[in-house]
Amino acid sequence: MNVDTLDLPPVTGAELSALEAHLAREAAARGLLDVAYRTVDTPVGPLLLASTERGLVRVAFELEDFTSVLETLAARISPRILEAPRRLDPVAHELDEYFAGRRHVFDVAVDLALSSGFRQTVQRYLPHIRYGHTLSYRQVAEQVGNPNASRAVGSACATNPLPVVVPCHRVVRTDGQLGGYLGGVAVKATLLTLERSRAEQEDEA
Image 1 (cartoon, rainbow, N blue to C red):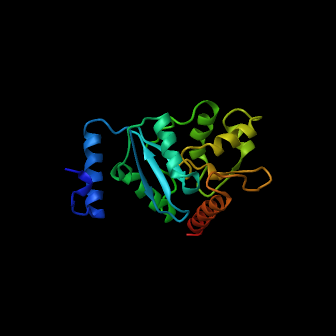
Image 2: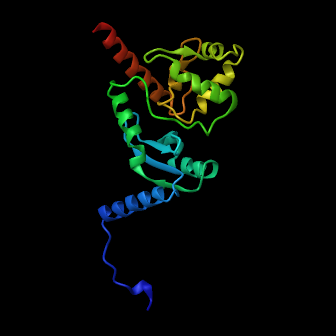
Image 3: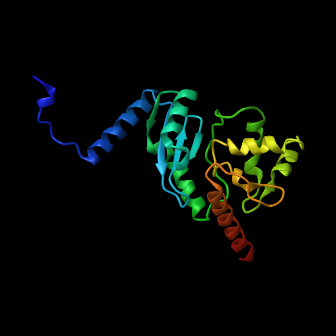
């Protein structure tokens, strides 16, 4: 029998989603799921979230090309990667709270496997910058014990694998200009405006 001639019933989107969810659960139960991912809609556009068993390992903006990001994760972390939204539910919930102005600090576990050395040192420091405030690249360099490393701090921010959650957007140029941002300068401005507005409201309350 030629399989091309089989009259198979159509598969609905709901059935396909259910099958994908089943495969994700089975892969996780059998220890075959090394990287789970999902996308979420946010006020700064869709974000791709990816997590290992250790924690959130990647947050990507749409302009980074999600397909390219997944290929990089497969190459650098593991090819056992699958869309499994439920593992990322806590992150998605905290992002909802952040963009609603109700969350200032993320509590989810993170996996910094995609960075190392001085870049990782800087990225570990970034969550210490207070919500609604900024520091310059030079000030961050001083805080991590290498005052002449402003340029390297900029590089660490530009390669931050966990933007928004690890707030590299709170680092600006010494002259007050925003500087670059992985998601684009407009997104950086939006995040800073959100935080300053919320912080001012809370100071006035």
